[in-house]
Length: 412
Image (cartoon, rainbow, N blue to C red):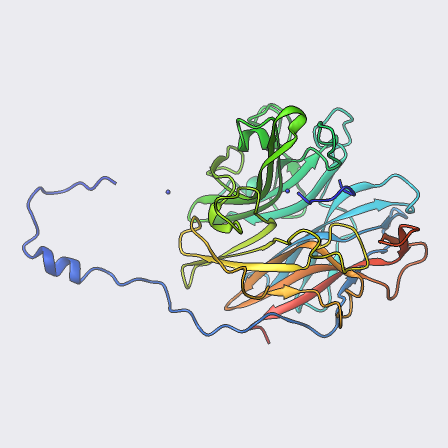
């Protein structure tokens, strides 16, 4: 979920009752930890060749992708390539109604990305569906233990209406699920499988904050580890007359054995807040990975202070950059808001592909000890004809294009 008026977030042991002959020695000789020590880590650096992709591509149906947003990337070791999913608004022109589609692209080298002509998922064409107007912020996890037709789980933010309380202009986001055998053709879970009786729907804001007057769940990030799906997501809750009081804003955590029925563990995650006593001081748009070799979780999120990104020319879900957090158990996180972000926009020397600012959210993939970060920028170079972005000028718009950019840590 984005703070914007424009868019629309864990044996019993059998055997003899006799004690071991030498219990102390048995403990001493227990298997050592398989966790490898952490190596020295570098910093994220933007790579030459940005931007890697620009909105404006025309597809075989004759329509354009008007946007690039919400990248979700992972390294496929078997195929030796990066797998990317992202959302694109698709239409003939900016003046025409668009449909939100999830696209799939691959790259062996981080430089050249091959985008499939057909989308892998899209907003529900059913006018009565809960996700008719929005199907965005995709995240995909591969589960080798699942039935063949459910090896790939896609979670997404969906909505069909604006948050139904005065003064709010963002969509009433919930989280949906779809499965695929190949990572390319995804099908929503059926209404019969859904805990809420609606095709696709698996997690709502009201389920996350059961005592709230209104609530939202959005921006899912799913990771599959040791037989369990972990989900982090943006969350918001309010109470009072017409939801006048914001009570919670931050990244929440849930788990599931099947990707459909979710148990919320903490909402929001207190150790990720700027102030644990203030449940409104959290971030959004999480990206999470598990480093099995070093038994360590890493998380990135956006968490800007009020007006902190107002120096960016474009006014459209902007972010200053992303903060990095670490955890040994996926429950308690270490994050230091007094230090620098892992990636931040520069007003004095904006990088290629982001001359006009950054879009909220970035995603990180693990490749051995290295990390690849994909993020979206706003740019004024190589703008397709009749492409515009909302800005802070009196006219409200300027020529501009959304771009996909690369930064790496400890990768050649």
